[in-house]
Length: 60
Image 1: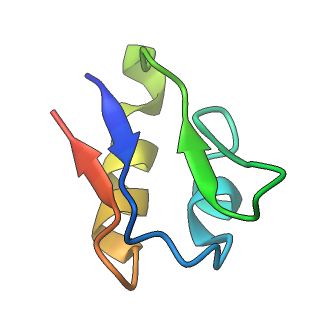
Image 2: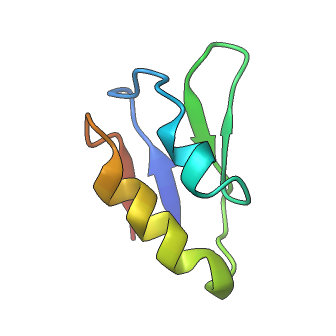
């Protein structure tokens, strides 16, 4: 599984609160995702994507 945070991100901080192993906040105040997601974090990553208020997280 891979995740990408697109330019819709408003920096609300929800995704790193849900899954800090995958998502971090950048110095610019928006979220970023790790390139590869370990299988044990796939559920939390999907939850973060579904919870994003601006649909900024793309999961594949």
